[in-house]
Length: 119
Image (tube, rainbow, N blue to C red; front, side, top):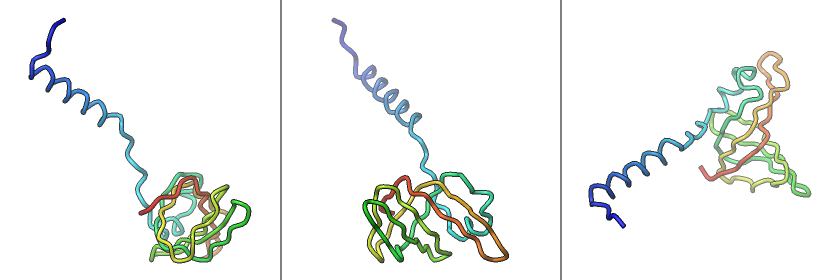
């Protein structure tokens, strides 16, 4: 059975490392809520991430709603099977942005939560 030299082992390690790096998926960047609400049609149906403080949580039978305030604005979050975090918690949320309407300066939009994380 042939033995690998130190150079051979090092070369294999580098190749393995590079192949792992090439297959990583870049995370979706966090978008300021103001940006989402200023141009909701641009983001409608797209996966976005927001992070901020939880406000007004309501949970019932595993479903819930809450708002996230990131300092630039507030966005309603809808959960499907995950409940809602506690008031004041710092959360990051990834999900589908849904814009219902914009009338003047008022925009009705929600983020349908797919994943919650600690920012």
